[in-house]
Length: 498
Image (tube, rainbow, N blue to C red):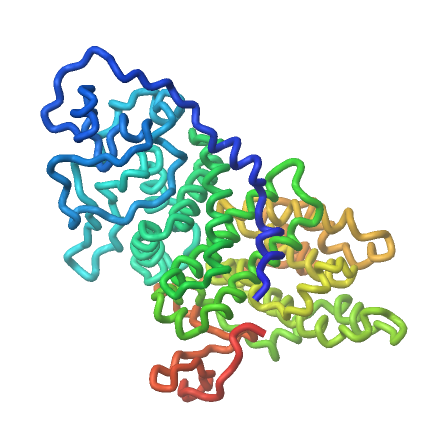
């Protein structure tokens, strides 16, 4: 499977930039300094008769000299987790250069003194626990640990609409961290996401580190996709989701690429590529499948909610038009847009937000290609979708995505299509949520219906295929099957990724 185009479009940083961000500013090492004797230092320091700082697994002297560090009494293997390459060569960079540490290496407890523990609540009814990593592998420093804590405490909730205690929350806060400790590129993604989240909250963070985290995450993910080893499947599918948030940062950059939403669409479709690569059975075996549950779609009912002027845009295509052979693709895509209109009439709920966020994952492959070819009719449809994106205010990594995309698309399309852009242009001019919905419906009197409190926000979310039909995994048959809406029994097989 050729995935090069996916990574070419997704990477917002260059290798040169990453290398710049990764360049260490190393202080010269002096072999002879006044010191007190070390009784439990490593063998190299004892042989050279210099003070050993006794850091585990590698002391500072051995790190700088790039030699193997061996202690007379090695630590028990049972207390060691697999090391990752998730930090920015902290062993060669003085702590004084890091703005988060405050310039003092003594401000943090040595990572060699504790062990990793995931505290679990004794009662099933208690809220889901937040993993507290109390020990760090040698390649993760105090700044990395702060970012990991920020991910488990705050950033992880950015990918769930089901709330505390749900299966999705537990995967994001616990399972994801466990896999990341075994997979360097996924750990880099967690660090990069936390850095971007802190940036969005105007909290102090290290820009050069954030840049390098993202670069290494993309590169490691690319290599893992090419290798496609079964042991990396859990990290691959998890990272395909995180990549959508990491790549969204480009929308907020002043010099962002024109029509970047088209590249972002490809990143979203990359989730399907990874599932196609690993197989649906392996998706369920990874324990990550709950992350990809989506609200079902009734395409038959959705068809009645497609705006009339968009239907006419497609139905009026003439045989000599280059889009004539694509009429069916446009009609199919408009059904998914109609599903957003249909469900928005019920009010903007968390499940509605999930419908908007996952919209790209349902679209036909051919429509994605038409967008990449910049076919005007395809861009008009995406412009209407961008108005729905602007409605999402509670997710930090979607901030500005809708408005930026609306401006890009309206400015790109020539005046020939202006008569179809009244809704996107109206959406550009308003920020109030109610006024934005009224602009989408073209109804200045529209009022939001009373929202019914749903004790189980995940009740409308399940595993669905790419046409929005609920499905289930048949264990004995080892395949996904459709579910009949009445009997909920297995029905016919389907293809996950069209």
